Picture (cartoon, rainbow, N blue to C red):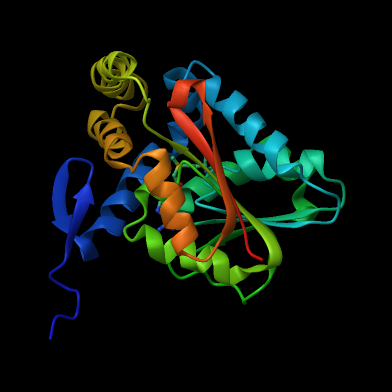
Length: 250
Ligand SMILES: C[S@@+](CC[C@H](N)C(=O)[O-])C[C@H]1O[C@@H](n2cnc3c(N)ncnc32)[C@H](O)[C@@H]1O
């Protein structure tokens, strides 16, 4: 019987054993944690902020909602959500504790401390009860998860009926010439920036490779439907460099 131990997956462009991937991803984010926020601004020339604002515009946070932000890292999404929704609460869950620790050092974390909690946990086996959140978000996290269908099933489980999933992730540009140009930027500039700013070329090489391995918009939307979500829709951001996916637990 195959117990799954000999299954393989990808870590960027490398093929690795499934069981090894989470440790490698944890290594990447532990190494980059202290430079994560500044690198995000540099790599995207600040555009990731606009994408996260677009996520909030579509999500339209409401007072009193309970948000679970998985792979929440340094808290960008949770802070934005709480700023827009008085009386809401947010749980930031991430498997890499150094990322959460960086988030807790940010000024917003102190200002909103009474509405925020920080939990170390894996998207594929969330440490939360069924039906316990109104909103589940995951921003630039899901492409790092070893078994994406498991994470989507967990999202469905922890959302209450009527709850909403929203995913922000790099995506595919539906134009070959623009995709080619974007690839030149990603593969030639980002690892060098990673070397200069974070002294870590390999982690940023992984990040750009993982973007290329992630499914396109329609394939990912089908995976979300497969996990049980209804009314699944997506919106491209900046020509499809990134995309927002929304789904509901009915
Ligand atoms: C690129 S960062 C995104 C951080 C934040 N959401 C943002 O948008 O800036 C990806 C995060 O995903 C986390 N992550 C990767 N795989 C995970 C998993 N299986 N469970 C929980 N977190 C995971 C990493 O530790 C890292 O903090």
